[in-house]
Image: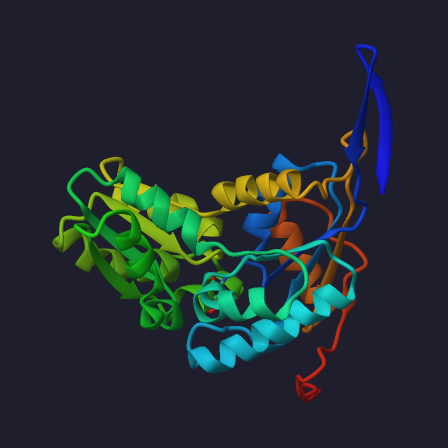
Length: 288
Ligand code: DGL
């Protein structure tokens, strides 16, 4: 679809694509990426899908997470999205190339922007990584950081407790601070000056990480870099929507819609209404 306009006497043709952007995560973590998309691209519509029925992805084998990611990606494509954002480090680590091969629309992940930013930010060339077990096991961050600077040492610590605590009833409680202290300790001992927070859930407890690591350590998050990459992809492929409108967001979950609405509102600081429950093709229905 095209929009014709006359600017300064010259006739220009502007691409216009009203299809939404698809965004997914295992739960509410990807809302940290959605937030940055809303800031960067307020005129675009979005469909957010949380695979809450199968959360957490982190302790699962990479092959299983890859299968889940393909099911969610195909569902979003069937919803008519023009681009898919894998707003989940675990799913990106497990299956980004497979998703890119399987889908007919562009697919943007969250690992490359963070690895790039960390390789640039470190001064002593010692970078810490906090992420889920599956993301750490994939070793994708090491590969991507080394693609920028093969001399950087990456110290990776899996954090199995953090996602359940963040999705739990008391995300900002003492147990969360204690869990962050425990995973930070080996990184402090290793003398890293930069830490990749390699899970989209982690920005939700950003102040806790900042207090535990202090000012001397640079914390790297992927959400704003990812939003920038999405914006550039839409522009280069000429599939942006027109700018003089306010975008809308549809929320889908494989879990309990009322739980998703409550958590979503808390973390996004936006009313999250009309959450739709979806069943993914290939996924076994959940027991009631
Ligand atoms: N937010 C996710 C990530 O970025 C998923 C965490 C999980 O489900 O274990 O890795």
